[in-house]
Image (cartoon, rainbow over all chains, first blue to last red; front, side, top):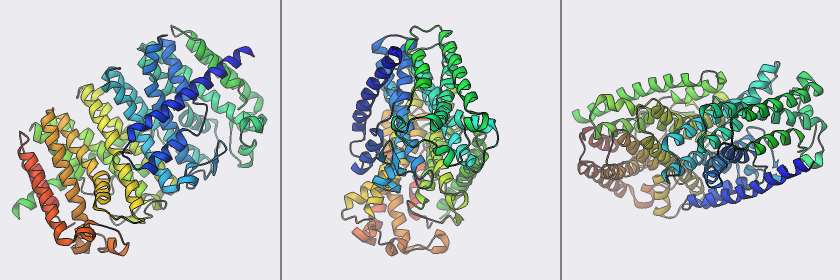
Length: 304
Length: 304
């Protein structure tokens, strides 16, 4: 597992850098109410694998293996983590999933109250777009590229994307019957932001339309594989490693891939999606493919 | 009052057109969960004076009095109304102001539930940015102009702007003591989005930096005047015309301008802010100033 250790370490290294960058980025809000910034920072720095920012940077490097260029991709990497973080804060609210803990820490509303949690989420969401405009205004990226990235952020994170997926998930709790519904939920709730991540990184690095298409395919597949693997780990995972109780889906009578198509077929589906993701990358005429290929495997072999 | 009747009618005319445009704009979400779109539409079409969209269009026309050009400003006009609407939905939530009624109709969460109201707000906020990117992608506005507008939307609507104002307002309910705190709240909670509106419209119409500065001054002043006038109407207004009970600020022990500096001085302040707003417009080398000047007066003389 030498291979898997190395990508694991690389992900952790990048996660640490992203966390520092996220903290630094909060300086832009100097002058805003300090409690609001505290609430934003609390959830931004509460841990997490930072897989979406990693994907932004890895996709940029895949298109143009140049360190200076990859630094520009830190802006969309922060943007997507702001979006992901806001979605977790709102998701945890009493009105939604009503979770008291996330990654072993009290959720945002438990610390700052429901009202502040709603507003901290709103502020993170609104600020995400500012990362991209700042990059353009600094002259680091063409305005037209910035517009494309913002356009996709608005779409993939909104009613047709992540928010739509959340709504479908919520409605699904009243009884999902078909694999199509479950696919819709996973695709939009999880996969859309993954697709945004790889495309945004690739755009920063000057990807061609063909490369963007291939990377979209890659992102779509690993996003789905990631979510199905999550369902699988809820059944066969190790509570210690996962950092959360297993069998919660079963206890909450949540309809999952293993529930609908069986555990073995779910595993096969994850493997198939992963192979297709890797094939899309290998056929994309990229400058560097190692990180994207290793990440695809890592997501399947992860135990947490 | 011939003068004031005419602007009143014009505002109503534009409000009707904006409402139609907002409805039409929802077609872009075809494919999203229908209940989500329903929740978004419910609040988008729940009435309101549409003063922010009016300001976007009036500022565009002031810079370049050309009807075809003003049509382009409909995109930022919709964007700002999406932002305003999301802020009202989240504001009304039980965790925030816990309001059951808005403009005589049940609030969003009373109809669709708290979770859906949170998500509908998130979707509206996320979609606001897409109006500007669509305009650029249609080739109607330069990408650089689109980036500036999005940059300001992210700032004026976020932690340093409207959301920051909401937080300060919430914290103020535990006891505001200074006029500076109240000014901070009004400036960010209300005035920032007004400033965004006039600047966005002006940018679409190709305003110079000088014109933008003057219009920012105008927006800042009428935004503050509007909010102080709101405080005044809560004391001396007519419940029938206002469509909401008066004296609610007093009953809720809310600290307002009249409370802090007295009713007469508040009225004088509104008059002074209005005159300064009009002076800024008159000195701005604009193509057409009637709408902006009349609107400034209208906001003071309104009875609702």
